[in-house]
Image 1 (cartoon, rainbow, N blue to C red):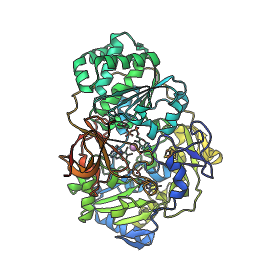
Image 2: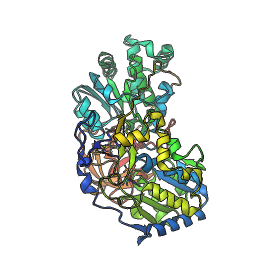
Image 3: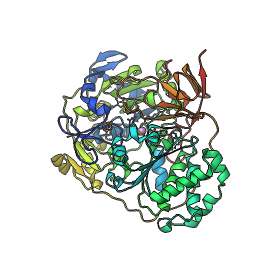
Image 4: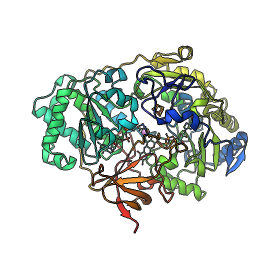
Length: 583
Ligand SMILES: Nc1nc2c(c(=O)[nH]1)N[C@H]1C(S)=C(S)[C@@H](COP(=O)(O)OP(=O)(O)OC[C@H]3O[C@@H](n4cnc5c(=O)[nH]c(N)nc54)[C@H](O)[C@@H]3O)O[C@H]1N2
Ligand SMILES: Nc1nc2c(c(=O)[nH]1)N[C@H]1C(S)=C(S)[C@@H](COP(=O)(O)OP(=O)(O)OC[C@H]3O[C@@H](n4cnc5c(=O)[nH]c(N)nc54)[C@H](O)[C@@H]3O)O[C@H]1N2
Ligand code: SF4
Ligand SMILES: [Mo]
């Protein structure tokens, strides 16, 4: 059995011939990447270890890396690992070496942290609806979610329902919905207030789930409809209609990750999550279920024994590198030159010899191409692992179906530990499979059961009977301007799959066609400008898989170090830009 470990809601499960299983909710189909995985596995692979472009043995590379580590202060060493592969052994366990030596760590905030924290304020958990719950609804609200592309199995299950989409542009999901509300960027918190205000005013609510209805009522009534109309760009009638649809249909709300990356994004998610509760619905939302399974990710990373010397927000890595506070960067499962805010500063520091960069990756990408040391990694088709989903409740024992190339993250970690002289550290000494068995204990599944059965459904539900209303945010309307916003491309997962499907940095906008610049106080990047009627005047839209400009500058040069107040998520969708055509 094999599970696709890319950062994706769906976590498709395949048989040993790489055919998607015909079980709910995989339902026997996969995406354009799943179809091309076996072919892609043979293309653009890192085929050897490299030091400064010269092929070397992995052992030589390890020696060189450890020498550099020993020359660097531990807090100036940073590891960046994210969700290129969601396996417990690939992503989480290898952080033990870095924690054991007390290097700096990121806050893992880039994607979904903001919403997890915002929902937990009210529910105590971010665990929402399961796929089995999805089918029971008659209607769905896609709020800041491009599910047609980003969540294909969820979309398929929900596509025969009454669909409402709330977005800042006419997304594909909006086009295929019965109702679409196109609002001003970053105005979602105000829209949520407008909906809650209407539900109260029209008496369309059920107080049984809310701990203190009066506090919520007074809060929303402190915002005038005129401010809500001006901020969202919707009329009071449209907002009342949305509230009435909410009351009539009691839809499932899919809260998209994109929301947590906007101005007021955490506040928006916090307020949106209160709408289903005010309608008396239990777990009437879905965001990400990853934190509800009972998998102990901190244990896997060894945080019960050793802590990083410093936490650097993913929003701030570029800034910290520029200040000279990071001198050594080790990345796996992540392509920071493509995807981190301010990545132009990381790139410059490497090129100027101020930052030593090591990348462990199966494929050549924007980061490996400039790294001082590159180490080849096996893909998920080539190694054993345990995989979970942030949507469905299957745990999968991943077995290789292709011969291993390169060195696994666990093997590399052990080599680094041996060379560094900490092989008998308790975190390194604990065998990886024992660590996994311990870490999944909270799921009710043992490693042995998983190895025997290959896939096991976790029997997990979290009941929330009362939702805590406070604290409620004090909002300021977002700054005016043309917002640069991003979304998922149907043929890519983040930066991945460029070896099969090519892509250009296209900035879809309402004004200009041709080659031009996007610019703001953070930087300037050359892109292809494309006029598109589905994009309003105050939005420039790009796919988040083509984040390198025509001038080779990262699009994220335009993204500053601002971050969300709940989970620290960077304001990836929260920056305004000017558009200029080259004449
Ligand atoms: N095919 C494919 N699937 C993917 C991915 C991929 O790259 N490709 N990536 C995976 C990952 S890592 C993630 S995080 C998820 C992301 O998937 P989603 O949660 O769907 O988020 P996005 O695709 O970033 O954006 C969704 C929508 O939010 C809109 N939006 C932007 N700003 C605002 C705003 O202020 N308000 C409102 N209401 N809407 C706004 C965008 O226009 C977009 O249509 O998808 C996962 N699935
Ligand atoms: N401007 C802007 N920036 C964004 C976003 C946006 O919307 N706008 N979206 C953000 C989001 S939601 C996310 S999640 C991040 C994602 O940021 P990225 O880090 O770019 O994520 P991926 O491209 O999914 O994967 C990163 C790398 O992991 C590698 N990888 C895959 N499998 C393995 C493995 O088994 N072992 C090892 N060692 N490596 C492996 C892949 O080859 C790839 O190079 O980007 C963020 N950046
Ligand atoms: S990227 Fe997502 S939809 Fe595609 S194969 Fe992987 S889990 Fe399935
Ligand atoms: Mo993400």
